[in-house]
Image (tube, rainbow, N blue to C red; front, side, top):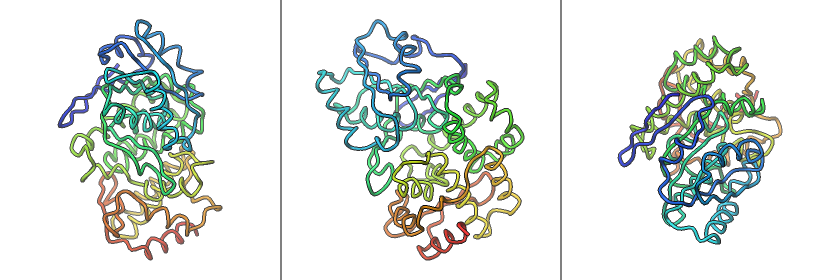
Length: 358
């Protein structure tokens, strides 16, 4: 079991990582009152709820299960959860456990940050994507019809408990989706990690315990490097959005259906890498390593044919990184190093989308 700390200006957040580590003592030390609400989805409820309940037997525990899927990360579900909390007369002494993947973590984190102006929050992420990315760093959000994660807060949890044994029951498609975020850390901050991923692809795909712990622990450490320096994303934390400008536009263009977040980000990362080459930053050799790594891990890297370029451009215009009318794109200055470019015009981006799709 590994213990890592994310230290921010106002809080120190323990992140505990290991296989089959879930136990009551890890949870109880972060709970003050007697009331706990476990919020999960219908899929995870069947798999892991009993295990969590066995850890909190002595508390007053309520359970709320919501439908599974990105399309439920919206204002309607957000208000439904608040209605549930208020109808049960919970107060500021409440502790909320977010049990699930990225959708649950983002949504429940937003609820925890707003209910009674903030209650205790414990993340128990169950997918690879949520373990290596969304559960660490304090971003919370719901989606809007105009784009993904446009409404939310920065709100740090009290603890993150990452049990890598959960990954053995993860559907293949979900597991591969999470690998996109793992690869990202090798592209933007640790080029040696990307090379390790490429060399150890078979072990990763076969979900060997040592490889699972390696990719999760390294990814969390890499993310903490960015968040500890820039918690509210005023500077280098924006580098974590590499590939997300086009990726989020793809998700929105498909109404968050028939494509997973990591799949969209995989496509977005190769697009951003192509622009990085065009801007004379990234070498062809490094671009090819990125492409081959995505390919070796079974990740997509082409825009779905049923999405119109016009739709992608529209949704990219709502990107959260924009300042005024300026597009701000995270590019690679070299493998393992990023730069934010605000010189890319809409005309240029549309032309590059066309080249990328050719």
